[in-house]
Length: 502
Image (cartoon, rainbow, N blue to C red; front, side, top):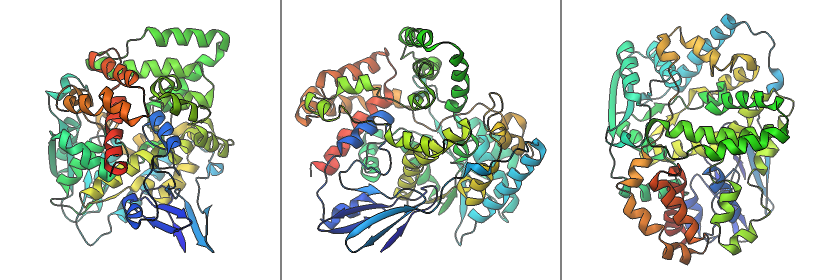
């Protein structure tokens, strides 16, 4: 028996190898239904998930159930299962010629071809549109290739929810792009019955969920009314260096000239004095500033890992019940990341970051969440930026054209200037999330008080009830920005009830 997973991890593949048999499936529920294994929590996966908000592949939240890594195949023979890598990013082919005009043309030509390939289907193909450069470029290419009118879908957030969460509203930019390209445009307001929606999403996710799962499911459900296949701009940030942390690493590197004996205490002081939960437009900047101060004091690898850390080591130590704390005392949540850093040590510093993202964050969080939420709506999502031809081009592309100065996705944006107005191309990056802060203070508050009550936490035996309460209260009062921390703890309890208590 041979199992093979795609290069990037666009689709999931899980397996379980036990003395009683071997099982594999695209959903963990199918493996559990086989009866060859009882569902159990994997404590090391919990340790990772608290750190990043997701377990690091090949682990899942379940003991003895793993996922086949992207770009790998597995062979089950004579009662044994072995895995092997069949594809990897190869940054050794990075070219030295950094002619911007030439590279912009190559990027544009490649995006045109891969978009055309991903549009091949015997059913209608639409697109998700955020008004950002990734999705807007794909929609522009679809218009070039489509004989009919392209359909695109966008989600917006209500003004009431934005009083706590300042999330950039995609609607204004999406409308502009839709009008410019003359497409069939649909938008939906993000107003779910979130208290009823969360348990369903946890069931489909088979793990605690993050904020992006909610809009991802809702827009998938909305678009399924008219479309069967959708194209997404996902992958553009990993291929062309589009995340704020890529720029932050460059800025933090400037502090390396300061001796560590001076830098570390200074940054520690800066982190401690910055407010954590400021309401309104300063919420995200303050959260990122605290992470920057904490991470700038570290070395290259630990610095980058710090940008992706939510529950710090100190927070986890305080959070765990004493028996769990002792069991996880020597577990390194970052060990897989360190292995990936080591695998690409000859690549440029920026490409090392992109390699680690490609192996961890992208398949474990973005692609996994997108696939599960879209499949829950019976919708197929395709990602042109992760087509092999685009991945090969990204390996050859000089790092200096991915992040030029502090301009992220530089060469993609230069290419996109031939398709879209400059203000659309160079607009500030907006994340894809939900107004969790408002929901935790509104419709989700009774659920938080119930599922994270001292009695429930004590009975579960994994966490210290007073530490959980401190996190919830600090977030509720605005002392700290712990919205995603509370959402994780909340949906983790839902996951336990859904999969382990039955």
